[in-house]
Length: 243
Image 1 (spheres, rainbow, N blue to C red):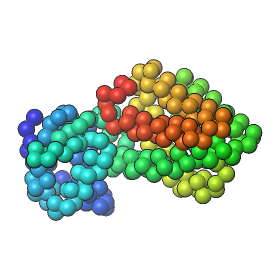
Image 2: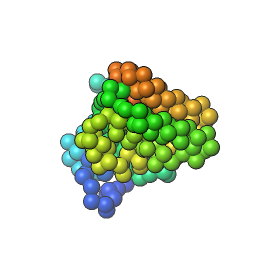
Image 3: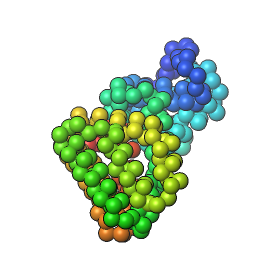
């Protein structure tokens, strides 16, 4: 495909958002929707700025976020290219800007929940460990039956946070509840429509977190949790992964 101005005149939505957020959302929709395939070159920063009638720094910020999400790659002297396309179904399950929020939240969760799992391994008591186990079993059953919800997934992560013994971690997780469960709902929606292997991988990732906490292996628990969140992010943004 050739690079060309991305959108018709004044493509920006009426919703009051930061301009960079709007551009990010439109570019994401164009990538997910198939306007560009993997390895296609995007219009230049200058062309995008003219197409959207915004400044180049605004476009640059949106492109930096897409690059951070692993969706585009910049090659010195050659331009910016599509690295991968998320599943088309993704923008049917949530608005493009909501997807951006979910991905930003995953960046926070990586550090927060990694530490949560580490502390849970060090500090959990028998009752807290039982709650983590119950949450894992509930999620395993729901995934097996194809009825998994964000609430079931979130219950496991909250149980780990409670076992950390750090109330601030729990409060931050609860403050992000809407964004976290929104991302979980999209991920689970894709998982329900994906392969049996994909569903099993999700279970296995939670099992590894559980086993490390149970064994009081703090470093392994942190690694397992951070790996799980990283894999969830990758499943969300790559249509070729775990289909």
